[in-house]
Length: 355
Image (cartoon, rainbow, N blue to C red; front, side, top):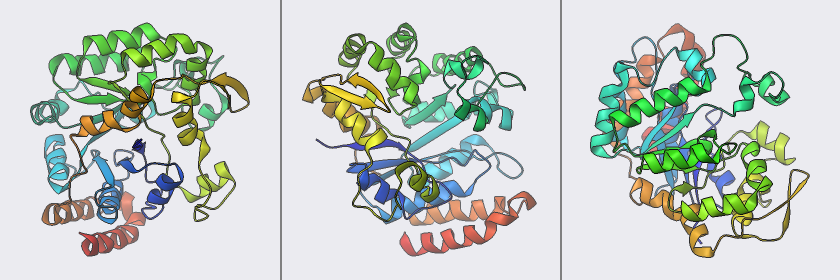
């Protein structure tokens, strides 16, 4: 069974480690999602470098950069797609990012990019919202508060508004090809999940954790088993694993380079949970697997992503990739990015040698 992790990230521009993490997580192929919109324009270059070092194995989705000198959204998207990216990552509808950037995805500034993505069937992986508990002062988990994801006060957009923005875009562009991350944060509202999938036949959901999603699945496994069987061609596997050596050591109690160990949660745990029927442990809570047939699991773990992106990873285009690199160098002339310039030079040198 081919396993493709559709949802990974490069942390701290640690380009070398991400393939090792994918190995330990049991992924034959993997997709890195740029977070350049998080005031980190280098992340697109890091994603290109990962593709260059893992030809035929690594996919990458670009993201947009904001601020002085960044230019039009459409021009950025076209530039990165010419360079060899496989799709577009949208995080701008995560509440903390929406507040940071002061953008709405239903704003006219994004219309040319969405129209072009629809016309050219550019795959999009789109994060909208967060768990509803993050807006509830009585239920928001402490780790979310520590991460700056408690949206109780301070001008964060409401979850309902983020959903409304997204549906406005989908109604304008009904052929948009999008996978919504984290089950669109509907694991506490199956009816909402069904309504979205039924209303918009071109969309998919990925099952990248939050753990709250899997607790919800396991509270009523028979109901969610029916959901997974009914929408088995619309569900995509992902983990949210990162190439962050410090976090890896903290979470798994070993150094990343000790690659003989296997990552269990979330990667291999989810892989077992999809087809298993016996009792399993979910971070101390006894649960049962979904018991899906092999044919459904094969679609979710790899086949659906392959159909979503249209096949194998796109090759890098040297001239376009280096054009994008020079564009990033220009963005980094902004004084607020001064600390990143040396690292940018290192990544650019590696990219020039690799493509």
